[in-house]
Length: 309
Ligand code: CP
Image 1 (cartoon, helix red, strand yellow):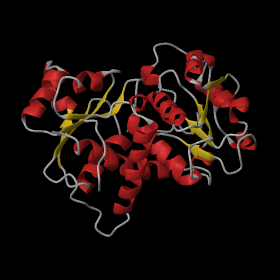
Image 2: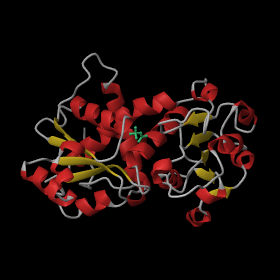
Image 3: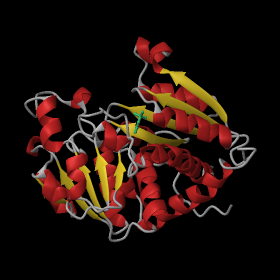
Image 4: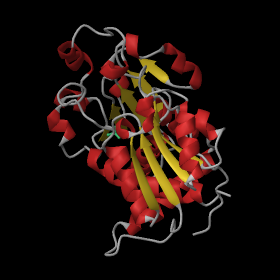
């Protein structure tokens, strides 16, 4: 596969052009075919060493990065942060410099601090792939969301995409927003006003206080989890009230297009932001998002590794 990619790191969709995003999606489309073969492996990263450094919990992202690395034939090291010298006070930068001294080519990092991957990327030679940093950015989640929308709807341009929930603390909302706007979608944010800053209007997003207004005519509804781990105070009276006012349920279906996609990055708080019947219903593409995450992460690793010195 030809590789016109020029960046050693993947930090945020904010940094990418529409052409670069499309290159990743097109590359992922090719890699999706690898997982449909009898032998689900290619030698694209043979001889490269990838280190997975997850300093915040993860199921989907961690597993699909590791599987993507295996499918690309990379050598893989998984660091258990709790059992590492980070626990003895070693800094993140010293940790990654030591990883680099062992000739690692790429570090995939998840961190609770916004900006941790950017801090590393400008200080080390190896490639850094952001697997989610605080409330800042989760580029591969947005890419798999875009991939799923494009696969199902044919194009992103002109789609009405409503993103509902805890926008304030969501790296997925920010990453989806940049990717969707760059590819020409119409983006609406909705949720309790305490969790949906009006500042996003300046970026070109429509902000709705009312869920029904946000849902009318939607081609895609992406539900976000309330991120209790990032909230310092109560942003709404109770989980029950949130579910009644902003949860997507069968009643909500009358507002969205009949063929609208229901998406969620996971993990789902069932019957809070999304009714179980819809999460498991015919419009849900939530597990297809997970499947597509593997192809997208293969594409990202392949492209980034291809331009390392
Ligand atoms: N969507 C997502 O990032 O899920 P994990 O936290 O399980 O990786």
